[in-house]
Structures are given as C-alpha cells and as structure tokens.
Image 1 (cartoon, rainbow, N blue to C red):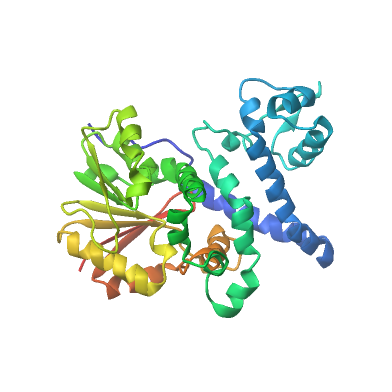
Image 2: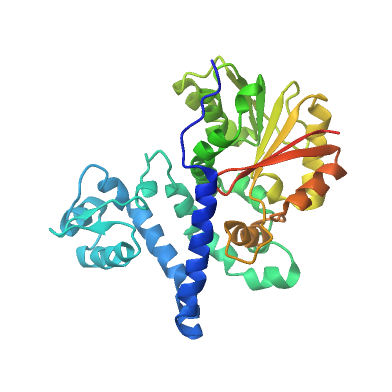
Length: 364
C-alpha cells in the first residue's frame, strides 16, 4: 500500500496568503500613530493571558456540542458570570469564540484548537506558554539579552531540561505541550514529504510518539522506533497499543548524547537541534552519525529563519530559545554548515504549509 498524503491547501497559496497578511499588517500599522501601534503590541501579552484563562477554564470544551449562554458557561466552568462575559467580550472581538444574535456563545475556527479533543489541539501549548513558570522565564529576557545565557537556568538554578526531569508536574505539562504543538504540523508534514520510502523510521527524542505514530498510520509498510528519556516514553506503549501499532512500533529509552538505536533508514529529529547551541547540537549529530548506515537519511524537522524583514514565527521562536535553553533558530545555510561540520551533506529542504521544514541530509 502506498504512502497516503493528506489533502491540504497548496503551498503557493499559503505563501501568497502570508505575503498579503504581512503587507496588510505593515499597512495597518502605518495608518495609526506610532505610539498607538506600539501600545497595541505591548498589550498583546494581555490577549495571550486571556486565551490562557479560557483554556484553563475549559470554555471551548463546554461549547463543543452546542452554543451556550454566559450563565450556562459560568455554571459549567465554575466562574463568575460577569467576569466570564468580560473575558468573552475581549476574545470574541479577536475572533476567538463568537456571540450569536440570541446572546449564546459558540466556537470559531480559532477556538477549536482550545478543545482537549480537537484534531489539531493547542490547549496544552496555551497552558504552558501562559503558565506562571513560563512567564517567570520571559520576565528575565533583558538579562538573557545582556548575558546571552538562558533565563530559565537563572530562575531554576539548573538547565531547563534537567529541571523538567526534577519537577515532573511541570515536565509533564511541557511534554503535553510539545505533543500539542506536534499536531499543528502533522498534516502539512505528511502532505509535503514521502515518509513511505523508509522501511524503518527512528524518531529520536520523539516524546510520547505523536509524530511517529501518525507517520506510521500513513505508511502501512513502514516500521518505527520511538526513542526518548525513560520518564518521557513511559506512557507511550499504551498509546501505541490503542492505535493498533504495537507490531510496527517499538519503544526504546536513553539519551541522544550517549546512543540512539541502530538500523534505521530514516532518523527524525523534530524541534531538537534548535534547543541546543552548536557544540551540543554537534554532539547529538555525532551520536546519530555513528549509528547510521551510509544509506540512511537524517530528517531535521525545524523552522528555518527567512532572509526577509517581515514578521515570521521563527523570529519569535528564536527569542523563546534564548530565554529557555542554549539553542537558537538557524537559517538554511546555518543548518548546512552545522551538518557539514559533523559529517552530513544537506540534500534538500522541503517546506510545508506549517512553520516546519524538512531538512534532509545523508552521512557524507
């Protein structure tokens, strides 16, 4: 059976939409005084916290079946009716929820991802990015700019990934948020790249298997190996069993600084290399290079920084890397140089309709 590609809007249409949106954003800001445009940007964090509040309360889940009044919603989520109406008044003005003529509230396309069970859910990502702990790290952005060091390490007294293993409640939220973010890119990835040509696919630092299991569901002839730290993959076998993939997906645990499974035809690193500086990213690449056969392929799933000066998700994500870890977003030439320095030749980069690109490389 052939690789099954999901149907999504064509990439040129996405590029055109992004270009138009960027131009409109610039034009709108040019039409208002500079201090007004700046104030709108500065208070954008309040919008983020309002979205976080709605996700925490579970408002979208309560609207999944039918529209509801403010009184019904307040009773369902345990909130003050007047305060909830004030929250919804703001969010509906941004297209997150809508209010019908009869006064009842309903979901919009932007509200759908706030549901726990949405096909593409960002609920856990919203809960992470709006959490007090995450905000604490961003509060020290100035110090990170001055020192070049991650604020998270300053606040927690240790590197973020070490802290995530110590504070498992926060670590589990982080893991769920990353799995949540994975759903955003799955269909675009599967539509843009043929994973079916690989017999054995190894997902290195693959979390609970969100990406790998979806790939395997669309590549019935392929097998997979999910590899991550023991605490991270502990719940993965149950999920793999529920999806009926036990006979095609194995789970192994360990650290990619020490070893990765051998025998793979493709090795996936999704949003991993960007977490680390060049030295530590190189250590990871060296580990993979040692495990890979000459014919295997390395697939980095990353955001690539563009050369233009317009707003871009990668530019925001780059500051998130500065605040949280030692990593950074890179240009395509930056990835080419990093790969070449550690024994890989970059073969191609495949854009998708999400911020994620597939960077394909082979051992040199």
